[in-house]
Structures are given as C-alpha cells and as structure tokens.
Image (cartoon, rainbow, N blue to C red; front, side, top):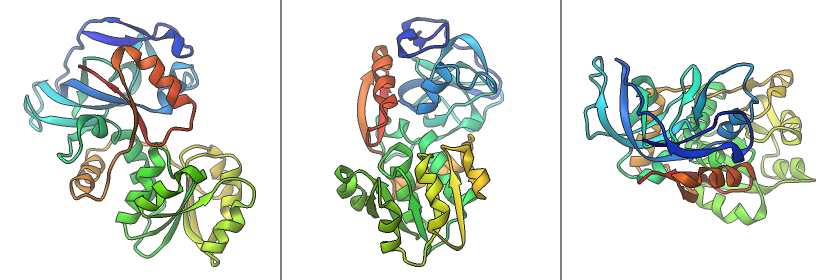
Length: 308
C-alpha cells in the first residue's frame, strides 16, 4: 500500500511517500480503508522526537492518529463492525509505528466509532482527536453544567471550535478568545468573542464581572497564567497545552481513545449541533505540506489529508 513514513526524527522534510507492507490484522482490530486523515500538532511533535521519552517509535513510522474510512475486513474477535461500515477513529496505540497517513490502517476496536452520517469523510477525519480532547476536558476535567459560563482560549482553532460547540450543546454560555478576524466565525458557533493580547483580562471581566465558572486553555503561556484570576469562586481550570496548569490548581488533560465519547460526538454531529471546519485539504503525497501548514499555528479549523 501507499503510505507516508519517516525513518528518523525530524521536520516535515523527513517524510517520504512510497510503498509499505499492508498492516497485519490483530484479533481485536479492524482493517480500515482510509478516506481521510487529519493533521494534529502531536503528529509533528512526535516526529520531531519531543515525545521520545514516553512513547517508543518503531521505524519506519507512519504518522497520523485521526482517520475516517470504510471497514475492509475485521479481526476474528470483532463483532462490532462488518466490511462496508463507515467509521472514524482516534487510532492511538501504546507505541508509534502504524499510523493513519496510509491507504489502510489496522485500528483496534477500542479506538473506533461509527462515522456520523451528517459529515463527509474530510470533516469526519477532523473530529476524533480534537473532538475527544474538547469533550473529555469539558465533561470530565471541568464537569461543565447547564447555565455555567465557560472561557475557551484559542477558540477558533481545531480543538477550540469544537469545544465552543460542545460547551454550547451542554447548555453553557461560552466566551472565546481569538483574533479579530475570527470573531464573526465564533459568533456563528454560539460564542462571545474577545481579542487576544494586552487587556484580555479586562475584556473578559467586562463580559463576566463575577468571573467565569470554567476555563479551558488550549494555548498555554500567558493566557493560562492569567486564567485563575478570571475564575468565579469555586471555578475550575483545565489545560491541554501546558502542564503548568497543575501548579495553578487546575487539571492537565491528555486525550485518550474512547468509543463512547466518540459516539457522543458523532451523535452531536448528526443532530446538527456539531460541525467541523476544514481549513485545507492535501492529497496523501503532500502530507509534508499539510504538516507545515498545521505547524504554523494560525489555521481556523482542521488540516486534512485525503486518500484516493
């Protein structure tokens, strides 16, 4: 099969496009014919070697954790899916090696859910990792309840735009930080936008004088540091971007595969309460360009790689 691989850690320049063996199918796995896979910052961070201390890499590595595709065949222990089923997945295993930037991926059943019918394959590919990150942060780490006010930092990005919609679906009022060029977009998602930069705290307080009930930080740094001062009494703080949140009394969130959570996201999409913004698409052979765009950090929504 055709796939993107890298044989050593490095920049997008180390990516190669070519032939690799089709993956072997374990008893509890599903062979998925990939239609689309999205790019996430963790992909190029792993590729740069930043996670080498916590995850083994089996070279050559096929990058990518997000997938949307069609079941080709199932392992002998699988009863949940059959050939022809359309699925999405956050295909993260305990080591890095056989990712989703390929014509086929062998995905453990625990990483999959049925694809929402309301989304095309490109949109659906952008849902798993980003959607699960937002969903697990909001429902588990922050335990957002109807009527509460939630502040989302970097609200127009891939995770942020989904977090806004999920928080709205949970019945929360949402304030989202973003550049002015994305304010109309955030309003369309149901958020009240505020601009980054100097004076951010004052702008948030003008909208929530008593403080916000929860802050979801997706950017780290200065935005995270000022967040505790924006919380109401008993307010909660979580970050997916900066471990310094622990010293501030908050929760650090690292997303995990979860079929039930992924199914909940698919249900939100099918009910019209969740959409995925696709910033750009690239064919598989141009995955390096897709990574470069994602690493720039200024895209609205998701960058997606498509497989013919």
